[in-house]
Image 1 (cartoon, rainbow over the protein chains, first blue to last red):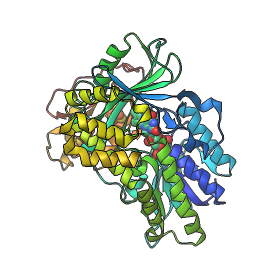
Image 2 (tube, rainbow over the protein chains, first blue to last red):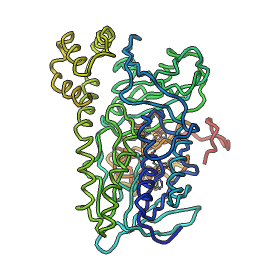
Image 3 (tube, rainbow over the protein chains, first blue to last red):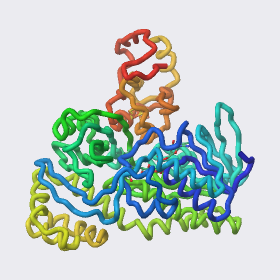
Image 4 (tube, chains in turn yellow, purple):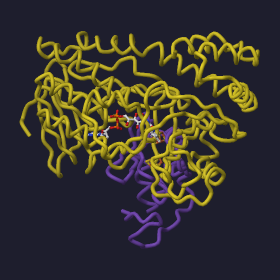
Length: 399
Length: 97
Ligand SMILES: Cc1cc2nc3c(=O)[nH]c(=O)nc-3n(C[C@H](O)[C@H](O)[C@H](O)COP(=O)(O)OP(=O)(O)OC[C@H]3O[C@@H](n4cnc5c(N)ncnc54)[C@H](O)[C@@H]3O)c2cc1C
Ligand code: SF4
Ligand code: SF4
């Protein structure tokens, strides 16, 4: 480890490693620090992602691919379903191998990568600009200087908080989730289909359940619920109920949990000498909470702004804010629409949602555009007209 | 044990000075969800161990609502404390510390 780098990145999840890759490619000296003993472990993820985004950062490796998905099936609480093809090619990855492959790619490009190295504080220069980190590695503390620090330390991000970027959203804007890796599922899952189960009253208040098959007989089966509706029944209890019904007798091979902010990206993701990316900047999708690909794209946008800024010797917030504009231009409207869609789904009664799925199931969805689908649904469910404007604009945006 | 908590109570500035955040270590999965929502930054996750700084905690209850397994609760200080049996392994197989 050197005493000084161009860029220091806190956190080697997908966003941090993606930032390290783009920074190293730009010829910058990079230090990538990960608090965990092993990068990617424990896995805290359903592991579903589009395949295109990661492939822009590293070559394909069958070791991180578990499974390819052909269709998504959205179920109501009655077990009726709508089956649609994914809007982009979707895979289930092995996050342990995936995260390590990304970090390894960064190191192959010249980044210094260290696990078991926790960022414990920020260094500031006399003008208050962030100019490095304090870190703890194998029990020893040290300071390392940098021209730019990237906070890629996930939902619990302390680094973004120290820099004054984090806000405290209401609990309604968080999912709380838990997932089992289930085994002994042969014959009970279709390995080509990702299942989503929605039932605001009887399945998962304010959220949804998923079954993401990893192979013919194993799957990530999990739930997220809105954190303001997590009592008296906890996320774990909702998941146990579902598993007992959907696949009784399945074996639980592992358990993981986590929280995800679903606010859409933070308004301020930069300060003098520091940028936040990925979950640390709340970049996950505010409806599904998927954040692997979005975090990587966020990191890429950050470096797209940071590399020339470093070259020009100007890492002021004013200059770095171009990153926030890039993000807003590409994802701002879409995220606002997804956020609204989640709120509509949350407010809708379960009976109403059940009926929607039933109507949609009878429509030839594969041949229809999303706006047509929305109009078709509205015809059958005039009550929805109240929300029509939002839904139609959502449909148009997602097309 | 009780006396130690009483001493800590003295330097806390709380909404409800008679409440303490209790972490059920046997349930906790060390997922960090609670850490992310704590406004005053009173929770710390080091490896698999979650700790709370009772002096900083404001009893806002957000972490307890957030916990996916219900491992957190605000308990009255006066509640009788259940003595923990002296076993090196807790019920989830993790070494208790
Ligand atoms: C239950 C659940 C299911 C999910 N399912 C999906 C899914 O199917 N598909 C999807 O796309 N997304 C999913 N997500 C979201 C996805 O996991 C995250 O959006 C994604 O991991 C974000 O990547 P990141 O790099 O920003 O953060 P992370 O992957 O969280 O990485 C942050 C890293 O920073 C490290 N770190 C933290 N503090 C420090 C420090 N002080 N110093 C050094 N390192 C530090 C952490 O140890 C961690 O490795 C799910 C999330 C949950 C909780
Ligand atoms: S009760 Fe509030 S202040 Fe106390 S630890 Fe929990 S979230 Fe933090
Ligand atoms: S949210 Fe619950 S399970 Fe997760 S670290 Fe906090 S107490 Fe433990």
